[in-house]
Amino acid sequence: MPRPLKARGLQIAQRLHSTAARLGTAIARRERLWLGVCLTAVGLVLGSFLTIHVALSRGLVPRWINTDPEEFLLSYESASSWIPGVIRVHGLTLRGSDPSIQWFARMEDVTIQISLIDLLFRRFHATRVRARDLTFRLREREQTTEISPPHVARLPDIPGFANPPRQVRQPAPLPTGAEKGQFWAILVEDLIADPAPEIWIEIYRFRGHARVTGSFLIHPHARAWVGPATVQFLQGDITLAPDQPLLSRCSGSISTVISPYDPERVRGDDVWPLIDGEARLEGQLADLRFFNHFLRRTTQPRLEDGEGTAKIALRFRRGIGTGHVDFEEPRLTARYGQAFLRGRAAGRFEIRRWDQQHGDLDFSGSRIALTEMSTAGDAHPSRDWWGRFDFDRARLRDGLDARPHVTCRDARPLYTLLGAQLPGWAEGILRLDGLEASARVRLAHDLVDVQDLDAAGGNFHLAGRYRERGNDRQGAFLVERGALAVGVEIAGGASRVRLLGARSWFARAAGDRSPPASANASEARLQRNGAAADAVR
Image: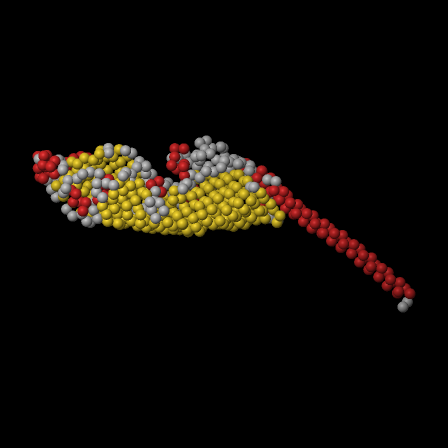
């Protein structure tokens, strides 16, 4: 090869080698740069995880979140975060309130997956939560005048809040937009708490094994919503708090959705139009005393005992409930002082319209059948009495207001209430089969009011009114058979039989302007012959 050509080839080779060397150096520098960037990023991530772990383990997180302990308070016994984005907490306690409610929750062991990015925007966003041993309590804040001692005694205690849970008379000024931004938002999704041994909402308390699933958002002074959320009752008891049995060995579920709302604008019962839900429960009726609470009863009659069953099916749409309750009760007891009725009961409560916001329940169309009833402790003990009650109109609001239609064997249980010694001929109504009656009945706190009682069967007719408030008993009854009539007056704790002018007396006592149309010459004869009337007595 010629010498010049060989020299030229060496020059080209040297240049290629130099270029390759410079390229290799550049690539090496770039690799080191990317490696440094990656190591820095990993260091920052690990540092952030370590920071979160340290913040959790040293209790710094509650200091950041608990800007207003009255609105929201978080605490725990121990916490760690060794896996990125996963927090493990023991003894987690949450407590909060707004102008309408106060609530409390505790979970013994919780695993939480969180969004780290959301922490930069003052939002604790749990994307997945698995909890064990959940205890939850919730109660409304009410006006002082609306809280009765029996109701307060049944409300759950919430540590850190005063009892009873009263509304603030002069609420603090609403925070501005900038001030609202200082509050942390708590967003929880994909929550499963199993088991949940206690759920206590207002006066209803469940203890046993329940499973809670759902999601919710709490942003103080700004926004809140719940659901879909479901409580599945696997096994346990529902009581009228604290310990009065309501439904034992119950099973079923309750699901609900509360649409987003502003807690500063929607307060108290005004939240009900935002609630949709369903409830299906069944269990044992261990004791019927709970029913006296809903009737606001402090006087007689009072329900007792029980070992029956009940099935509940309810649906709420915008706070208005519909559904029914089927029940069977083989040991119903209603006590009147020293006397009582006892027997079997079965029926259905038709829930036509349940306005939770205004505490108004319409259960017209409901029916109750009583069989194998007996009375004892009075002047007319009996057995094998039966009756059917069809409520043409029935409403529960601050007590019971109903117009039942009754078909029954005879009037014997009525005499448990009257406590009067009637003439021999009037006692015939006790043994009369196929008595039909109607009346308007009002039961409320310390009140029994029966108006427009009208009953007929065979040759007998019975009319009357009765009112009891506390220890004061006032009543007037008229028993008729053809030309014969006898009145029964109840005043205070005594009963008095009226034979002379019974129809006229009853018309005045019942507030009528004229005596019944059945008045005839026989009454005039009774008026002229008081001695004979006394003999009949």
